[in-house]
Length: 310
Image (cartoon, rainbow, N blue to C red):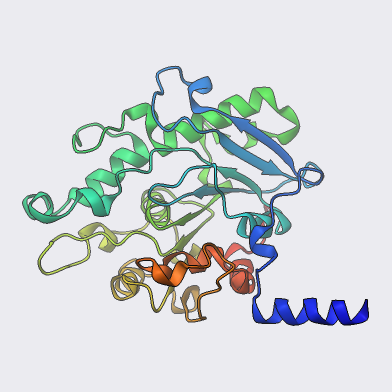
């Protein structure tokens, strides 16, 4: 028995996350609620996978962590180890269902980008706030991230009074001072865009999208240089030094004014247990390591801070 435990410990040392990477959210500890967007708004026709809410009913006076997935992602697959870490830190967690395809990097490219240097910000404004006028994606105003979050909070405030969801609304809109945002890739970029336009509790971007203003010179998009409404000390970002877009991601962090000690340039080898064992053979295999590899849990804890409202 003792020998078996020693072997298990050795395995975990060599492959941290081999078990934890598969860890799901414990429904006996955390209340789980699933709500389809079309239930909240009958005009919703796309991206109708359920919003998923997790929280510890024993924890009071806590913040929300809004999770936004990357391009092609849905709430059918959420980063269990990271979400568990957020729950352990005291947050309520909302994994929001929204349209994730196509992504900015699939639309604002080539001639389209060269004819409209602001393509990326117009794209993100439509997908985040539902602002009309951007015709290159199929999104409708009701599909946008903020309208969907608003509808969800309004619904929860009536259907789950124990969660005190009305406390996260101000003038019937999200009270961003009580909401932190974390996102991967496209979702990380969406979080940054929201944090630039609204003062959120904090924003955590994992390899958040790399938007350009010119397809030939690969200049990062102009919106990154605009003034942020969220104070700089509330910004956090992580990317892997070996991922394909590491250089522009570093430039973006600097353009956004993220403090140096809030930027985490990750450098561990790929953990074959954090996703597909054949990950190294895939394009840009390091791109999801920041959110998928449990070895970075201490960094997650630093970026998350406390989920309690002061």
